[in-house]
Amino acid sequence: MGNDRIIIKGNKEGLNAIINIDKFGNFEEMLDALIEKLSKGKKFYKGSTLCITTKLSSLTEKDVESLKVVLFEEIGIKDIVFEDKDIKDKESESKIFNGVYEGRTKFIRKTVRGGQCVDFQGNIVIVGDVNSGAEVYAGGNIIVLGSIKGNVYAGVGGNRKAIIAAFALQPEILKIGDIITISPDDFEKPKYPEVAKVKDDAIIVEPYLTNKYIY
Image (cartoon, rainbow, N blue to C red):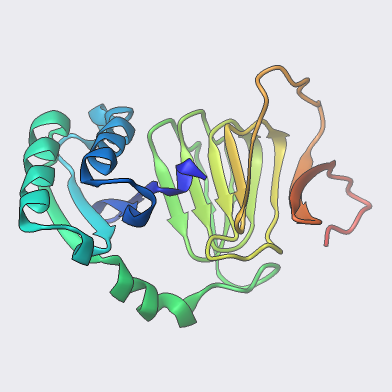
């Protein structure tokens, strides 16, 4: 999917842009896509430190300088750090989170607003909403005691057993493992909690019933 070519995440140091440079025809195409993606949250990103994670062997010194100039001038990024994606992937191969029903869980007791990003390797429980334009990434499950209207990615790293549940499930983009779906604009919003999971290589959404065990 085109949405997987560039992923923007937030961390304690600032921002991380993960770029799959092999999915672009050339450097200029990648740069245009990166600027377009960052421009949507320009007011949040201005003054931030940006870490670019990509295959550095595919970039020339001229490409790196062009990246810096454009990001400094057009987005207002304060500083740029480069990280080799090939090395990072090899280091993290043995660190993929597989615990879905138990293990590390991050509790967030507030609404995740548009432009904000939450990223955690374990499960995430949000006591609040995920607003339009917000992004949530979890290695395990995502449980929202509120409404989901933003982008949610569970089972990051390829875990198809993860689930996404919410009182109101109305995401812009929903992804579990390597399976992704986009909500239609004109669907009727149910008035009951729902859970999304992968079945037969597709994401299905079912009502969440208190007397039903989700597996």
